Image (cartoon, rainbow, N blue to C red; front, side, top):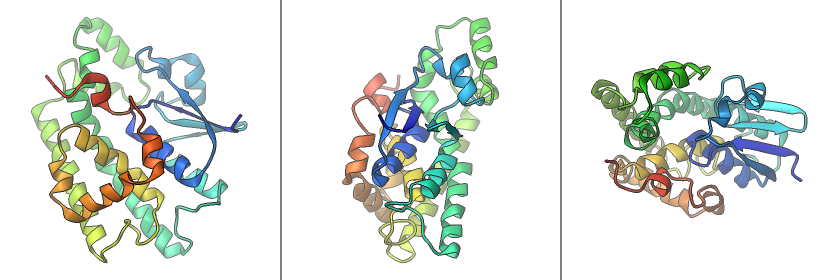
Length: 250
């Protein structure tokens, strides 16, 4: 049995970026699917691993590591075969700059249309008291669920999220265009590419693909990534929202 166990949701973009990197680096792991419908991420046993009540989490032997970007940097530090970070300190700092930007802008932004179109359906028939009690159980996502409520996010918050997604797509495309790069750091695929790919794939799944395909460098980058074996292993059946909810957002 693999020493690493990855606790994750199949459809979670943050889980997907860790799976991508694990497959790229050839790290064997046990895939432990946390059951979202049963709120298993809020269960006592999981909160002992991750007090934030979110996925992913990894255990590596007796060690526990939380947060998808932290996990990516951890596996880079510990599993040095098949590196996905530049060795030059300045280039590594530039890669980390991309990582921080992706965490700040597109990663949280993609949650809003994802919940609006599909995930909010799980809550629309709940009584208000039950919904508020459910939201209160989330250690760091309580206010996210309360802003969403049972009907989705406000028009203003939705518009802001879409603007952030578009701005991030433009910045990433410009970064690729700057030196006709295959990957955001040049010839080397890095954890920064793995960190952004699930957001892009989710945008396409949500019908926001024009933000990607209207930018030739970004379109080529996505198609280049989609041809890799790690992509196929990460996106197995059931990992996209349309696999679960269908293509009609209504």
